[in-house]
Image 1: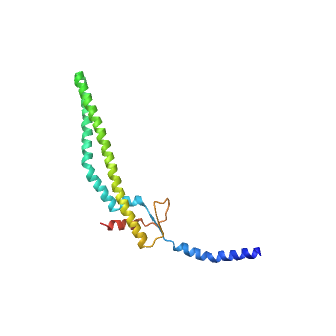
Image 2: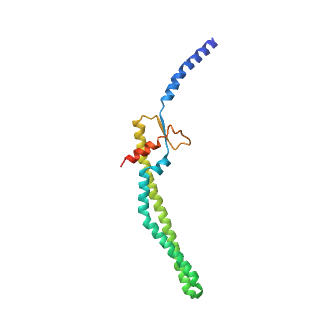
Image 3: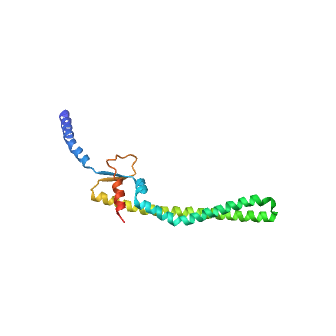
Amino acid sequence: MKSKLLTAMAIAAITSLPTLSAQAQELKIGYVNSERISRESSAAKAAQARLEAEFSKREKELKDFETKVRLGEEKLEKDAPSLSETERLRRQRDLSDQGLQLQRKLREFKEDLQRRQTEEMTAMIERANRVIKQIFDNEKYDLIVQDAVLASSRVDITKKVIDALNAQK
């Protein structure tokens, strides 16, 4: 009795394998490389151009101020032997104040730049996610994975996402 039951179960399992295999083949999976989208899409390039335009003037001003402070330090070092004690201390104090001011401005610049980069990246990611969702719905995917450790080029739809992003205005 036991062997007949096992035989029946084995036959049932074997006959269902083609059905499971057919169902597995119908599964539609896609992979998206977010880093590549951030690098290659026109939306990412436009965001980078906006950031450069927004921060380039301020960056140049900071570099100029940094040069001014450095030149002031070099001049003080060169002139120090011929300066009175009071004048040397006054110049040192002024340079120290300028150095602190430069550090503060650099920190503020970096914080502002980081904040704006995050804002731009978030907006681009939201746009990319909407495009991915459209592709998911329109092409009836079962699963789309972002940033997998390994993925076959057969399931890579990154180019399709980039093209769809670039087509948007």
